[in-house]
Image 1 (cartoon, one colour):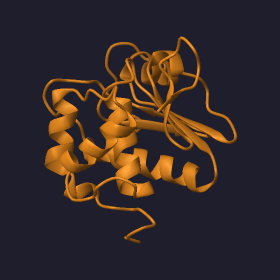
Image 2 (spheres, rainbow, N blue to C red):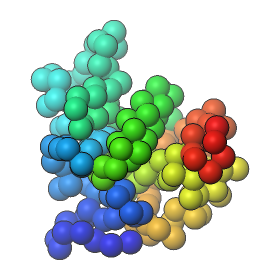
Image 3 (cartoon, rainbow, N blue to C red):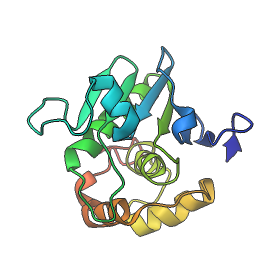
Image 4 (tube, helix red, strand yellow):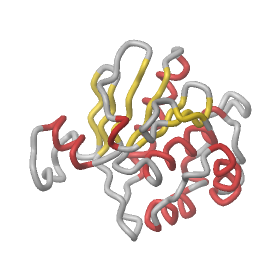
Length: 174
């Protein structure tokens, strides 16, 4: 794990995959995609709302624009996540990585949501982490990112939905 910017929590957990907290928030650009994995302030700012967005809004879960993906994610102690948030993340990040871009994933603290998404990307698309279970992938990811501290809700969601998230890595070709 390499810390990229002194005084920042941005770190490279795998070549071209970076994880960080709010200090890693920046606009995406050609060659550098950014996943903003936090409702506040990023998703709210991108869509121009305060409080909560109506659930019937087409961008309630996610908004992808050019080189940025804003996810409406909070870090609750219970799994309130929706599968679509994770599948949209995987599709966005995989497309950017396959196109040669660097991908930065950030949340507020850089330890739970962003790192969990990096773990998912490394397991389910890059194919360098265990496939059989979240627990096995988590153990391997911790060697890449010792700062990983998933919240109870996201850990439980990934445990319960690991098989449904399916492998899209080049190694198994599915």
